[in-house]
Each structure stands twice: as C-alpha cells, then as structure tokens.
Image (cartoon, rainbow, N blue to C red):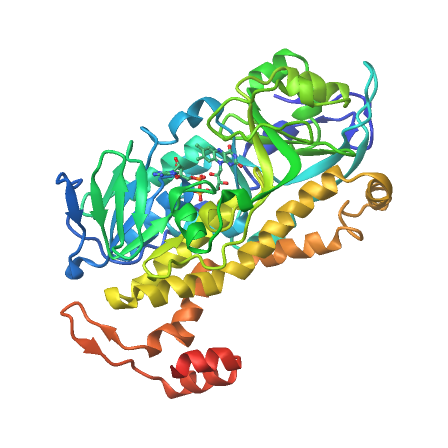
Length: 541
Ligand SMILES: Cc1cc2nc3c(=O)[nH]c(=O)nc-3n(C[C@H](O)[C@H](O)[C@H](O)COP(=O)(O)OP(=O)(O)OC[C@H]3O[C@@H](n4cnc5c(N)ncnc54)[C@H](O)[C@@H]3O)c2cc1C
C-alpha cells in the first residue's frame, strides 16, 4: 500500500507518493548478508548439570573448564554466559528478579544495537531471519527542533539528517537495529540455555547479598552460599559486586555525581500513533524513521523499535529529582516535564503510558574492575555505567561479553584467573570510557543552550541546504567516532591480547601439569618492539 506524505513540511516532508514505509519496514538497513552469513560457533560443550540443590555448592571440575558465577541475568550477564559457555566453561547465573527481565516487562523500552554489537550477535548465529524480524532498522536519524512548531497548523522545524553510510556498515560487518529490551533478553537467554549438554544454570529470584572476594564466594538472601573459580558482577550500576569493589577503594554510590538531567522513557504503540493522526510526522516522512528533536535544555529522541515498529520515545529533561530505575514508574507525569515543545511531540507524549524515569549521573570511575583477590570482576554497566538510553550501552555490554569469553577460551587453569581478569580491564577500559564520553556528547549537543545552541542549528541548516550530512563540520568528530566505534571487533582485540601476551605465560593443562609456553620467535620479537616499557616489564616478570 502506498502512502502519501503531507504537502509542505520543511525539506524532508515533501509531497510524494511513495512506498517509503514499506522500504522502512522491510529491514533493508539490517543488510541481508548480516543474516545470510553462516554462524560461527566455537568451543566445545559439556554434559548438563542441574541447578545445585545443596545449601552450599562448589562449582569446580577442571576437566569441564573453569567455574564462573555471574551475578545478574540482564544483557551483560546473559551475553557473558553465552560467550563463556562457547569457550567450554561452567556458568551459574544468579538473578535477583523472579523472572527474565523482571518487572521491566511493563516498561519495555528500546535496546539499540550498533554494528559493533550486531556483528557479535551475527558471530553467535543469533541473526537469523526470525531474530531479525524482532528488530526495527535504523537507516539514520533526522534532526528537528524541540522548541518550535508550537501551534496547530504549524510545521516541524527540520534541521537536517544523518544517514549511516552503507559502505561503513558493510565494512564494519554490522547492521543498526533496535529491539525491545525484553525481546533481546529472550534471544540471549534462549541461546544461553540452548544445547542441553552445556553447563549453564540460570537461577531467578536469587539475590546476592554478600560477596566474599577472598573466598570467591557469594551468599544469597536465602542463605545459600556458592563458590567458583571466578565471580563476574554483571549486576548493573547499583549492584552488589560493584558496591563491593567500591568499598575496596573506600568509595560508595554516594560518589556518583548527578548531572541535573533525567531521562523519561516510554513505548507508544504504532496503532495509537495512527489512530491519533500522528503517523505523517513520525512514520511517513522519507525512509529514515527516527528523529532527534533538539532544543535548548531538553531533547526528545524518537526511534522505531521491535518487529511492530512501535515508537520508543525518550525525553531528556532537567525537571526530575527522582532517582528512578528501569523497573519502576516515573513519579512525575511526562506531560509535566516535557515543557514547551513542538505540538506533534506534545501530542505523542500525551499517548505515553508506563513511563520510567532514570537520572543521568557521572559515575565514580572504579580504579580497578578486579578485586584485590584477583577473582572477582565487574563488566557491563557494573564496570562502566552509561548514560541511560545512549546509543552504545547495549553494544559495549555485548563487546565485554565477547572479549571475556574469547580470552578464557585459552585456559582451564584456575591460577591464571587473576591475570585474565586484569587483561580484560587493560583492554576494555579506555574504549568504554571514550564511548561513555561520546554518549554524553550526544545528550549535551541535543540539549545545549545559548551560543552553542544557535551555532548548532545554523550549522545543521547550512549543511542540509548544501546537501551534506547535518553533523559535518561542528560534529565532525562524532561522525569520525562512528567508524572507530562500529569498526571494532571484541573478538580480534581478545586475539591480540592472547597472541602478544597471554600465550607467553605458563599454563596448567586439564590434567594439572604445567605446560611451558610455545614461543614463536618472530611474534616474540614483534611483541617486544611494539610494546611500551611498562608492557615489556610485564612480559619479563
Ligand atoms: C529490567 C531492565 C530494563 C532495562 N531497560 C532499558 C531500556 O529500555 N533502555 C535502555 O537504554 N536501557 C535499559 N536498561 C539498561 C540496559 O540493560 C543497560 O544499559 C546495558 O545495556 C546492559 O546492562 P547490564 O546487563 O550490564 O546491566 P543491567 O541491565 O543494569 O542489569 C543488571 C542485572 O543485575 C541484576 N541484579 C542487580 N543486583 C543483583 C543482586 N544483588 N543479585 C542478583 N542480581 C542482581 C538486576 O536485576 C539486573 O537484571 C534496562 C535494564 C534493566 C535491568
């Protein structure tokens, strides 16, 4: 069915009869080769274990690989489970919520996966057509003014657009896709549990209340105690494992600083958008389908999400003191914090139900992601909390998972756990910290005030008039960041560590014998000459 866009709405909304929604809906921005490429699977699988039923359990059987406890069954926890399982290790996942996604099902919002994340799903064989159908594509996004178009009959003030370069997506082996959080969780959970021969157990309603880093042991609220060769905290920014490591550094969550901004988030069903006559503005303009409405002080980001292409609406506002979460309702109505804005935006916001509110914080940077004992580590949001609803948190959670699983594919030796966990931080910290800055830069650019605001709008308008990407010039660095961020391969990075460092250390075989490293003299030489002094010292230790 062809649809007709409204007659005169800035540059983008020209009168055309076009099959754009069909283009937009056919997920062409999740390239076919993303789906057609045969999945790579690595590692071996082990016979099944049941959930330990004793009051005290010890996961240890060197022939079966190392034993890991993962605290938290969200994106990082489940993805890390897949990755460690693929490397032949045993994993016990402990999740405090009683079910997958917990209370979040009512507040389901948007999981954005950039190419650096989607290539990991691809490598795990998780981008079959069925999975792809659960994601909305994102060919790019338009920029519009938040603080214009106030009256009925006015037009949205269009500034320009950013389209992903197809060559870039091809070279980086990824598509840009947006799942419902809940759907992504289901995909990851099913894969973690797939293959009954694997040694994976996921326990819901299992809240960890204490972590003993020296004993490598966790205690649940039920009193159960579990031990393992390593504990991985994938328990988010307020989790117990992060808290334990903060305490080791003499800090607490109090050390996180508020930015004064909060994020309101909701999903608005597509049918409701059509019913209220808002489709021309949010669906039927061009094939881009996503919009960032920029203002001074506030900003709204609207993206299609999930197989149904509902709309994920997120509003950045300075008007909330609630220290909320993804699983509890916002205390203030969205309409009370949205402020003066475009009339279409206001109408869309009025349709939002089940809204959540999450504060944007500048978190304390843990100096060490690994405990002093060397056996307890954090990753994902627990290691590097992101601004909520940023472009990158989900993808870097997948990267963390892919990296840790890949390096642990090289050992079954419990004595090497501290070294491997430290290698994770050494390789991942700088990238995650830069990506956090990039995500904050988007929020700042979309909400800036005064001279910066005027310059931003003028620059985007000029770019658009000249047929250029709206972000060229003033936001050139952000465009260049995309290539670096999208092009990264966590798996290659993990290989790099192993080839240059990891394999030169003695390791125990499964029978417990010490195996001397096999030194390839060419690689040995090149690793020395390409290393810094510190790294050389590390090698010679
Ligand atoms: C329910 C939920 C819904 C979300 N929805 C969105 C969204 O719509 N949009 C968005 O941008 N981001 C959302 N997020 C955040 C998003 O998941 C993260 O930004 C990131 O992508 C991955 O985070 P993570 O897996 O490292 O940590 P998180 O997603 O924060 O998960 C941490 C997990 O650890 C569990 N946990 C915490 N403490 C304990 C404990 N003591 N014992 C056992 N388990 C524990 C939590 O219940 C949770 O499942 C959501 C997070 C959650 C938990």
